[in-house]
Image 1 (cartoon, rainbow, N blue to C red):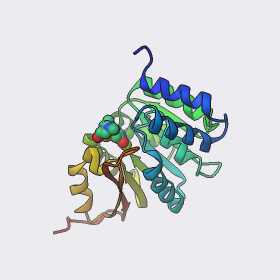
Image 2: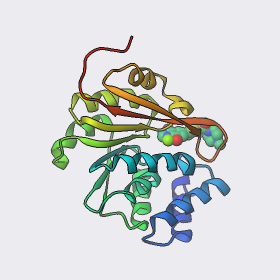
Image 3: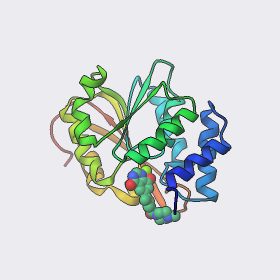
Image 4: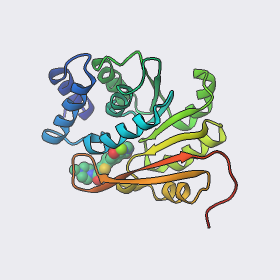
Amino acid sequence: TRTTRPQRLLRAVIINAVRGDPDSVIRAIDHFCKHTEWAMNIGDEKGAILDSVVMETSPSTVLELGTYCGYSAVRITRLLPPSTRLITVEMNPDYACVARQVIQHAGLQDKVCVLEGQSADLIPKMAEMFGIQTFDFVFLDHWKDRYLPDIRLLEDCSLLAQGSVVLADNVVCPGTPDYLNYIRSNLNYRSRFYQAHLEYTRVLDGLEKSEYLGCRQGKRQ
Ligand SMILES: Cc1cc(C(=O)N2CCN(C)CC2)sc1-c1cc(O)c2nc[nH]c(=O)c2c1
Ligand SMILES: [Mg+2]
């Protein structure tokens, strides 16, 4: 196939969404994925849960790991107050290129920084790069095997504060058992599972929301 799936998704956004209207971008991507071609955006069912967690957190500093085509970056950023920025990390340059165009079509380019590179390399530089201390909200949606090492790295870099919220996609499908075991048995977090379905399918999936309680000791027995 001449074009890639992200490029075909971008074309659907350009054709069907109103420039500057984030909700129409979200609708155009969901329509494309339901009726034309499945793609690994969080989607509308889990997206509504993401929206509610973002709104209840009302974060000032936001980090997303795993941009893909920018769908969740648009979902999150459209809910943020004017002065707040989203930092989103994507290791695949082709995905990052499409995401920047999707985000621009939504009119949110001034509120989103798409960082190309590996989360493991970039997390230690975040505080210095952006002049921030901690993230109020972190969305994990990059790769199941990186959730656990990256949450540990965020802790080690003191990038989580008491009250910080970490939301993880795909904890059932494809599944992140090591991350779930860690976060649910760790006294420094209060976790809650939101049952849902894999985007655009009837396959079971879910989101895990974990509030960082600050640095206590020990593990739950
Ligand atoms: C690539 C893929 C295939 C899945 C699946 O079970 N499939 C059966 C059903 N058919 C229809 C689709 C394909 S689930 C999934 C996936 C979904 C996400 O939300 C992801 N988020 C972040 N990073 C990922 O690697 C990621 C992968
Ligand atoms: Mg996902």
